[in-house]
Image (cartoon, rainbow, N blue to C red; front, side, top):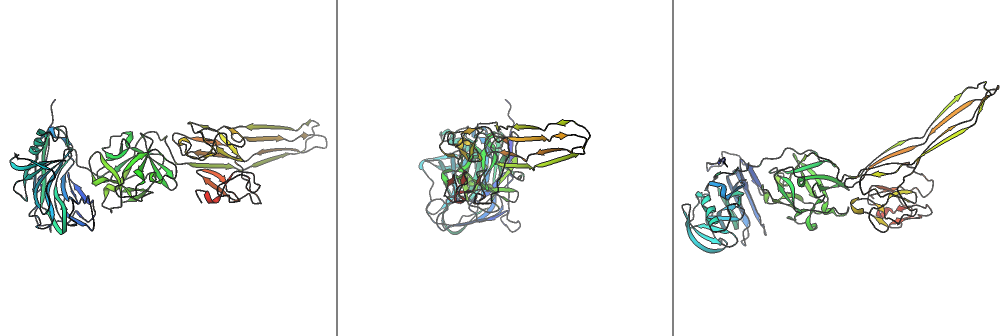
Length: 577
């Protein structure tokens, strides 16, 4: 097989003076970042503790300065420049080198200047260090690798320390990767995601770190991933439509990996398709592949709480409820329970980047912004419950014919036609209705006692089988049309002929239930009695079903209600009051 050689070479030579350029990034945000042309600069405070502060000012992705304050007890941050994404296997790389110029590091604080490679295991190359720091692991050997001599360490990951500290230079990164393969620490099939260089800061007191230039040159027999680009401006999301939801910083799609939520390249897979379903004034996000919904795992309210998918719960499970807030061209997805945002962890642009929740990080945090883009296909999963009602008022038409001289008498005739309408449904949510003291209420499809709510996924209020006082039925109210022709009598004294046609009031109601793959169309006569007495006390929308409000507050459901002989709900438990 003939391979095409892909070559990307970036040599960035920048003047030390920063006064000639404006800053592309000037931020104290924990995860502040800026990407352009295959390079990114990150503030990356990944373990903030105590009274910390870290601000970064970047003239480009490869030239920046950072001022930091952190207590000294473990690595707190890694402000860095990164060449990404690469996405090629180690075995496919024919050439890989990097050059860096960091200048003299500060003489105080606890820190190190280091390369960080992810292949996909972590590999570090230390160039310079100060204070109470040391590479993790046990000493293995001293080796000459790619023209430089390193002390080699290994514990959780391999680490390479130059024997003579330096502020920069050119490094044969491929030689280091090949050495790791030879030791069995990584594999030729391992995917190199990126090459980073920056400062691991363990402790600092208002110390400034700087990067003057950074570049990576790579050749591979495999195609190198294109640098990320932002997604198009978001459409205005609505219910009943399938969307792919693209991360604002890299255009990768919100996806599922098992039950976990991750970002992946947009492939059109159904695991990357989502539909909005209304619940109260919020939304559920239903996944097309699994029919599960997006949620914050374990009801967490903390920064970093994991986001995954779970079985759709009842209307009170608000860790599955989300609001959408537009900022610029994109939307923030905000959890109802925690008030935190759906966030791509550590601003990752790689496939498999984890999705968690985090506090709002500002207008520049595009890893917290999402673009909704319509995808094709049927929209037969769950949509929000909507009701459309059309009422035709009663009309009477009367025609009087003048007297005639006929002596024929036609007897009065009455014709009555009764139409019975049966509710039809495409799914298992069509289990009949119950005449609940004058109110038509759906009969539950699952076995229960009394009243049901979730009803096996139908998401509605219903009366359990066997609990209906009038017995279960599948027939809705009849619509009756009566036409009466009055007697016509003709004599020499002439009798008036009168014809009267009355069209009874009819109401047509179409309901789209909040349930998966179910459309229910019902047509029935709806009669509202306005009483001059105490039985007219309003209605309660009980999860989409209009139920009379009790005139006597019984603290729950009522039946006789002071003689009104009906089912009713107390105002105190009505979900919309």
